[in-house]
Image 1 (cartoon, one colour):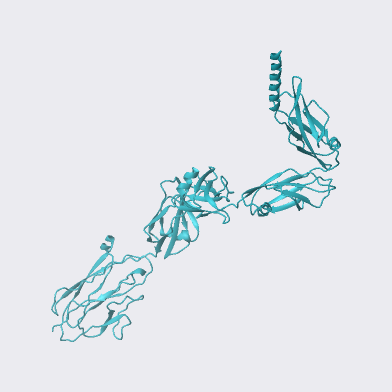
Image 2: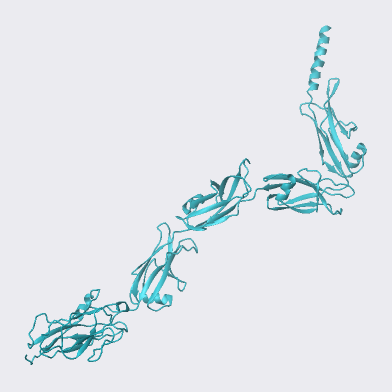
Length: 570
């Protein structure tokens, strides 16, 4: 008997311990806001480890009728009646459950309280656009009320602040204004709801979140167009109001980011490597920054900047740089070995015209003058560029400007030599003078000069031989000087010779017999005192020519033998 009593006591003690371990239920309502005619479902959620015999609901501290089910559905009117309230109303609901073990019913603790809003006004719908802004951006709050309701304003509850702010139902605020209402700084997140007033306050709208970022940086590049070997400086300009930790470059094509200093320099080759491209290419890049003491926060990205990476420019050379109209010049457009060239082009800066040519091209001076609509003498400015195979309309950068000088046609002037006696012939002897005369082939209309050549004669008479020689001189040779050697006294009239160190005149240099000589000429006596010997080596006239005559010109010498009889004796 005592054994049975002990078993009964142990059994009930065990049951009491299990009853004390019953978990608290949770009550849920759906939807939490209804009108009088709407329905709401109440659910008392119990632990899955127990077998529940029934659930009970308390509505506004009034116990609802018993129901074996843990799910209860009521209309708004029924809730108002059970809570003994009128519209609008907020009805609190809680629940508990019962577990039967043997002959004992054990009740759980009450759940937490949940509120059901009963209102004959429909709640508005809140729309925010855009949901993500910066401090200087604006966001539009649109509290959409039912069409059957007419109100002059709406109330916005920002960050659950009380009281709500009265604005127009369509309100625009900046990020800074929202931060001021919250008494926060960016970056921040704002939760907003709205409601309206008619006969009474409407239910609150859905909750919308607005994210306010720090201002985006501004990315600039200098220069925006480079070649592979050039460098570009990227500046990620951050706002002065933020404390920046790091800056990042974001390459759009590969969606990769590179941590850099906020002022960073890269070569074209590095940019091409980062984006897995080859020149010519265009690299699109943005930048953003992180903040100190803000964890993983990332600023908005800057606007995209495009960097054009071109192939290296070609190098243009000309040979020779100075030509005449009939001469030819070779233009070499030397391209980079890393590119596959399709065509080369010569570009004349005046006028701005381009000519497709081979990369090694020869042109005459006449062709160059025709291309540039000029006449000689002239200077032609030209550059070159190239196109690439399989690159469409791509054009390389232009080479540096090269100047080609095109001169007027001129002839090569050879040395004129006067052969005079070299031995001291006695006066009265028979003397021969051998005078080589250069035959010139003029190639343009140039000035003709007459050269005065004096040959010694016998006795008192000095033979004067004037040879009219057509000397064709280029304008560049107008600086050549003719010199006379030291003279002896000669009797009689005088002749005019070019003075030492004087340039030849542009017109004809005539021989004068009497009177004064023109400027630039020197007066020489034809006759000297009869009792003075005449130096046979006088009046040597010669021209100093800076360049040697062409080999083909050597055969143009014509020799004339002049013999003079000396019949006068002294």
